[in-house]
Structure formats: C-alpha cells, structure tokens
Image (cartoon, rainbow, N blue to C red; front, top):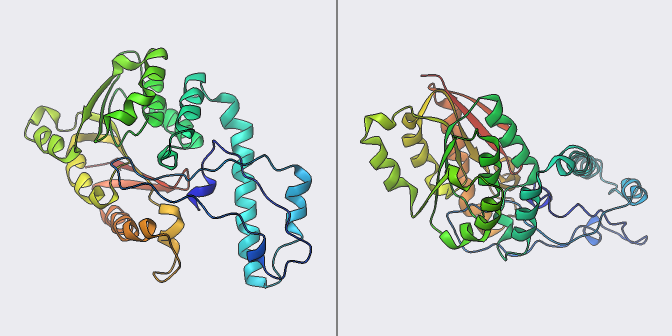
Length: 302
C-alpha cells in the first residue's frame, strides 16, 4: 500500500527489467524523492514524473518476477494492485474528475511538497460519501493546497459550510483562486493556526456539541488521538469522522524492524496507536479502507 503508487497525478510506470538481471533489485522502481519538513498538512502520496506503461510492458513484467516463491507471490500481488489502481484511475476517476479539481491537482503537482496532496480517487470517494450522508456542516483539519477541501465544497449543497484549519495559509492560497473560480469559496471559513485550541474553545460552547455532519482529519499524526478525543463530541450522532493516512505508507502492516524512511517510522507508532484506539472505541462504528494512503471512517453511534 505504498503511497508512492497512490498519487494519481502521475500514472504508474512499469519497467521491463534488463535481460541479464540477477536480482529483482536491479529493475525495481527508482527511489522516491525525499520527504518535506513536518507540516500540519500530512504527507501523503509521493510524486514523480513518469510515462504511461504500454499494455505489452505490463504483461512482459509478469514474466520477470523473481524466482523465489514468496518474493514472486508478493511482487505479483503488488503488481496486480498497481495495475488495478491504474485501471480505476483511467476508467472511473480521471474521466469524471471536475475540471476545477484537475486544475488544482496540476497546480499542486508543481509544488515541492506535492506528496502531501490528496489523491484523485480519494477526492472522488469523499465527494460520494458526503452526498450519501447528506452532509451540510463540515470541518477539515489539514488543508494543504485544498484538493480535498475543493472536493468537499463541490459536494456540499449551496448553503453548506466547511470550517477549514491549517497552520500554513500560503499553501491554501495557492489553491484559493481555483476554489474561487469554481464558485464555492463562500462555503469555506479558513482559520490559520493549530486546530486543538480552536476545538477546545468550541467544546466550551454547548451549541457546538454534535453540530457537525462530517469531519475530515489529514494533519499531524502525533495529534490524531488528541483530535479524536475532542471531535467525538463535536460530530453528531450518526455523523462521520474520516481519518486520513491510517495505512501510513503500508508501514502499519510491516514488522517494527523493517526498513523505512525516517519520517515514516517516526509517525508509524502514532498511526498504529490511533488505529487501535478507534477499533476499541464503543462510541463509533469504523471502516478502514485502502483508498489513498488509507482512510478510516468513524460513524458516531453514541
């Protein structure tokens, strides 16, 4: 579930290995770009420019899988997963992506920290979810350039509202012209700064309790537990909280001593702590999905 392959901006390139390769390591994908500094907008899908793989290249790669039965099995599963994702993107995501979201995705791809953006398939998923639950009053913690925010704003009714919070206004303003051009900026109230103090202030007002239909969290992983402790009282019974990156580059399923990039390893324990806490919380129903870098939906039931 590597988030490197979840970025829909750049299609997956499957390369035919050299004929004399003695090890699968000789023809694996190039290493990913280095991660950005910590930010309230959570690292997501790493990006790199690549060309589309032709069908012949895709099928040729299967015959070059390593000889080890275990390695062959895992590599084949990974290959099938990537091909399935590419099929989903090309068949049902890109053709239906609103023009404004495509424009913002293209703008974000040029940003040096573009790995923090929401994937197109996740944006489509969020829009569908919001319409299914008839959401009207929503909150988003962690905005970056606003791709998921735009998806939300487009999905909400004309009088829908989004309280959006991020510590970096500059990134938000990068996507703001696109949001304004799409005619949905009036639905958004953006607040720059840490979200926890704002949530604490809201909890002091009983009118805010149970007032949100949907809340999307894609921010600092080391505070996810702290967010949940507060948000559970702000979302209504029957409302939904969505926590992004709950598969965290697939690291949550890896052994603790597995090779990982530093920032992946650093936040891995926080994500795993959240996953365990959500699974044990009797106040919610949960569903963890392998969309984007993993998203866990929590429906409040009490």
